[in-house]
Length: 154
Image (cartoon, rainbow, N blue to C red; front, side, top):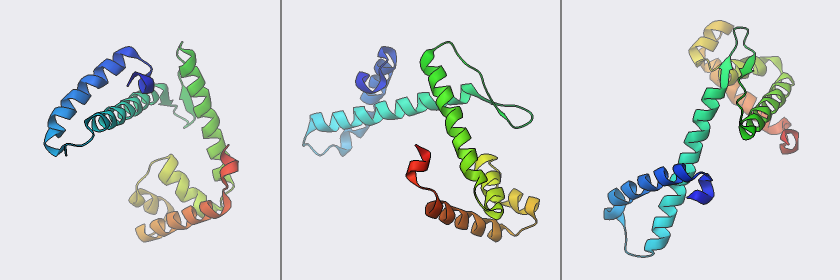
């Protein structure tokens, strides 16, 4: 678990959760490959632990300014700063790609994915039916698959 988490205290806490999970999972154990079964539970728990920790870190770093521009508070740790800069760079790339979309798709995609509005809110804002919003989002996804290439995101 330390190999995944790279932090001794986190590895200890996650290991404790693994033992609890192992205890509850014992009735499903099929008596073959105990070491493999235990390792699989441990690795999955370590990955979950790391994702949860990264999510918390992201929530603490990101705040919203009144004008909608992204404001990020930098911490003293260099890996946090690096992650913040990578996130800002990725956000700029996403905004650049979204600006290339046709307006009918761009407005709905921006409202749904970037502003996190519901279908109803988008429909009311644009004077559309909810089904029309669903349809435009579906077509926008199709457009993205067709026009956006993987190398554009590297």
